[in-house]
Length: 100
Length: 165
Image (cartoon, rainbow over all chains, first blue to last red; front, side, top):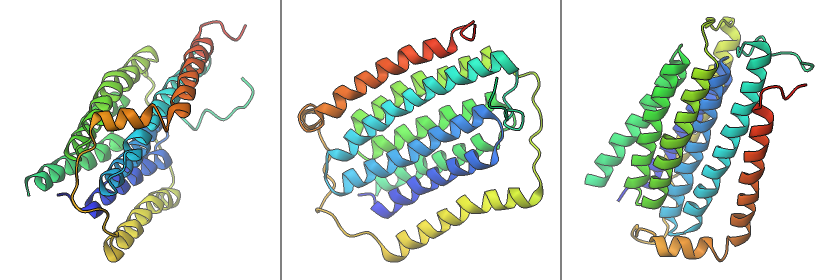
């Protein structure tokens, strides 16, 4: 028997660490990785509440979130590849032009 | 008692590895710690009796996304690794926002507690899960296949060399 408060605290901790990474880091790859952390924190919360409320919906929503994470990673990598082929940098300070 | 110990172990592993992940200077090391984090989170899912989702987490994240990260970092070779510089005040502000959010969330959760649900934590079986997925959630399930197809085509078109010409 795992207390729901512990599960929620873990989910929130992972989410906040991911948020910290997104805000503080300037490397594009590390920011994308931190986005994965955000999604994983939400997944932990969904599974914890699904277990707590005896509901199937939690796990089903986790499946959808994982699918969305895959889509986001694939498109994000494609964009990074296209940009780096063009500009040869992925420091966020130098990626500041709208016109290529 | 034993589930709580196992859960604490995996939870500590998750938090430590994710902190290390965002603190690494080299993105390659970050990917390594991301893999550790994902594996630890899969362990958390197994402890929470979500076997199927834990297996999906292992297959999709550890087997797919982490390897994708590795390949992209290899393709864009990062020999110009610049130190990330930021002034002290913005850094303090940016660190304070998530930390204060976490403190407030923990204060609310542990201070007020969460209402009790149904008694006992019974595992949700795979037939239950798949039955619900293919009846109530059938339309989102089908739409997600369209999304994945769009992502497949879009990623290839964007990343193709010479796409700009």
